[in-house]
Length: 208
Image 1 (spheres, rainbow, N blue to C red):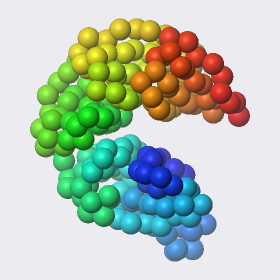
Image 2 (image 1 turned 30 degrees about the vertical axis):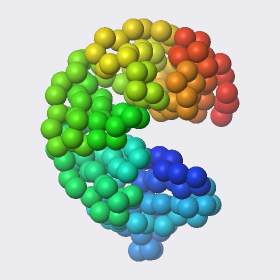
Image 3 (image 1 turned 90 degrees about the vertical axis):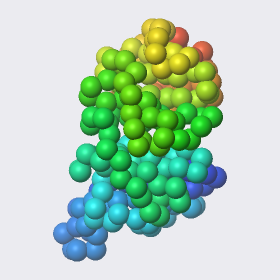
Image 4 (image 1 turned 135 degrees about the vertical axis):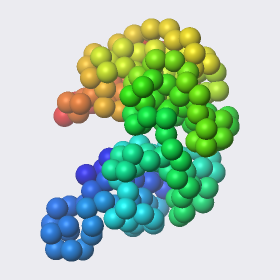
């Protein structure tokens, strides 16, 4: 059961979550996987840190940093060595999503249950940036996206003034930006949608 996932490089993926219940029952793995890594595009996986101690519901790779929100212990974890060791940070509130600045890895936005917060020092300190709550994507320094719980899409240049641009047509489960104007959204029913105009319009990419 993959809860957190991020692409860290060519064929290198990072993930977190829970193992097959049979592996827990037989004692092969603990209920929490910590951070797991694949270096062959997901064919095989191995635990690299925090096995049995963390369940990352949010994972974001940002250059030399990895950010993870451990939902089990409500703690923000930051790694500077590709997830081998971690520094614990105190988030401003339970984290819904994280979006690192693509031009500066130590700057990160956190969408929380209390609104949007920004850190310029890799999570050591935070300041409020408004009431936006939802999933985030930050593909370019001056282009930030958010999708709220109703599926409405917003864009901002500075994480302060948000402009509504479109709707994905359902409750979002994940948001990904692969280019400044190209977005993918996963809905809770397994539908995947794609936008190539910065969230204004969306087309069906795949359905369950």
